[in-house]
Length: 114
Length: 115
View 1 (cartoon, one colour):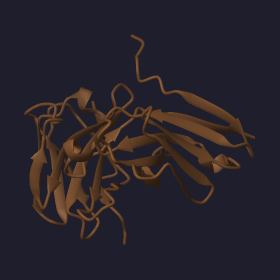
View 2 (tube, helix red, strand yellow):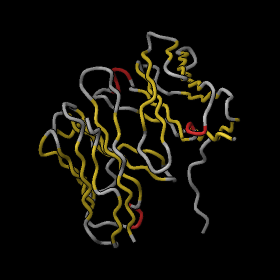
View 3 (cartoon, chains in turn orange, purple):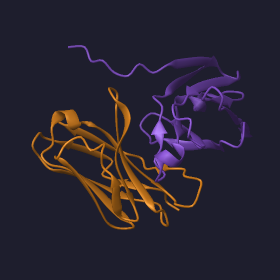
């Protein structure tokens, strides 16, 4: 298996622009998680899905952030409009409903908003 | 101005020595625990896990110890190598209250291996 795939790996954009991050989970996994990692706050859970349905989005910082999972093999995290404080590394992870609940992480998208 | 970030605990060890990284978890209902390794510029990578019905589990060069009485988890790395230099995170599942495969991550420990 190729593991969790994320794109792009790096994104540089200007404040106010829309940013879309993409994730392909491991085939057969039922859960998908979006995290943000910064030096200031560490690793934060933004939202997670089970069988394509959002279960907990309490970590999404503002209405500027939105996430979708139209099917079992694809999810997006969108920031509109982006701000410099959104600069971070965004990770996608997936896990199976069958124990153990180990989450497998993608390589991350490093976002810089100027 | 000067930026303030998370102050990660740092463990410095000599190559070949054993390393012990500690973690205090918060939820007494947690029944599943994981150690992740994160190298610079990469995503967290699964190392080893343990269920609450066990006190110890061994992998290749790594051992995880669980003390439920004091809610403490440790990761032991034998014969530490330069490639072990990374940030190590512990994670817990929150048991029945966590639900949905959600994990809570610790802040991490930076391991530096000196030659």
